[in-house]
Image 1 (spheres, helix red, strand yellow):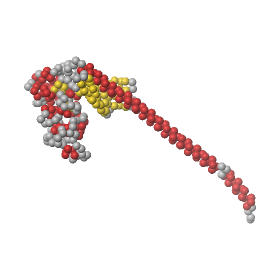
Image 2 (tube, one colour; image 1 turned 135 degrees about the vertical axis):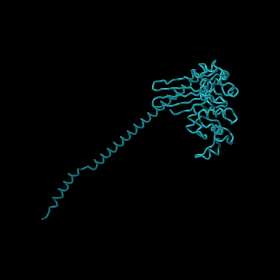
Image 3 (cartoon, one colour; image 1 turned 45 degrees about the horizontal axis):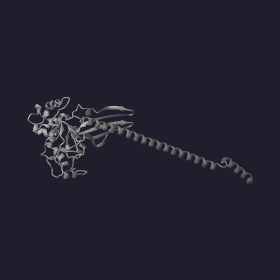
Image 4 (cartoon, helix red, strand yellow; image 1 turned 90 degrees about the vertical axis):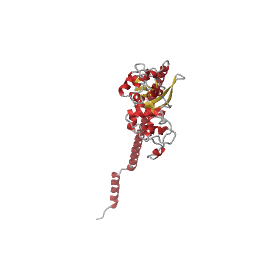
Amino acid sequence: METNTSVCLPLLVMADKQKYPTGFGQHGVALLTVLFILVLLTVLSVYLIEDEYMAIRRVSNLRDYEQMYHMMTGSEQWAVKVLQRDMQGNTNDHLLEAWHNLLPETQINEGRMQAEVVDLQGRFNLNNLRSREDPWYALFQRLLRVLEIDEALADAAIDWIDADFDVSGPRGAEDPDYLSLTPPYRSANQAFGSTGELIWVAGFDDAVINKLEPFIAALPTVDAKININTAPIALLRALSPTILGEPAAEALAQGRGEEGYQDAGEFLGAAELAGQGDQIGPLIDVSSQFFEVRSRAEFGRLRGRLFSLLQKVGSTQQVRVIHRRRGLP
């Protein structure tokens, strides 16, 4: 039976047009393009919003940091004013003066601040160490003994700052010892910049430094005498060539009274120090030049600490800031 192709062909064409409407391909491409543009605009909007948010956070952090830093330097300047007033008509420094109770924790708008002043001459100055024949060397050895630390470590401290390359004693160390380490380094051959520098000195580890830190300082001078009005008990014990017992040192501390010792002779006249004036006298004083302001502040999300080294300058009756260093909160 023959098929009429002239009739079937129009029918197939009509069926194909019904299955695939005219213009479908163009509409599909346009829809995909619109979706792509929409996704692109969404991603771009998210990026711009996030970038703006980060910019706001950066500005906010900078504002908080500036405010926090000004709070800490404000504490420093307050300490300067208090110490300047203390210099007027005052011949000694003791722990019942205004500088020792500078600023308790105080709430200020969105932040908090606190500051204390430490008399660094109530401590042993590491930069007094020069040779084994020096009386400061013997004093440092006694302090180490009082704190139950190997007194021979005093040799390593001397070698770290002296200019020669001769090993001072059994626990001394010079460049050959440090160059053999990993990583290698050399001894400083100059004064200590901070007490934390001890970590590089042979024999001094974290445990030793933490035990020693409340009793030592690294002052930008030599022969800084110890203020007997602010020295802790352990250092008072070490002043004596025979090392005082704790009860004797506590009696000396109580002898300060509310006004402190007015002169070294009053201190040396104590029964606990009978016959030791010639050895102790050159090492002590009743006033101080060097103080450290320890400021802590919190503002917004930020917290910080500032350590400021101050010096009383007797010739000008002024207090100057020698340097500042930032610390961990």
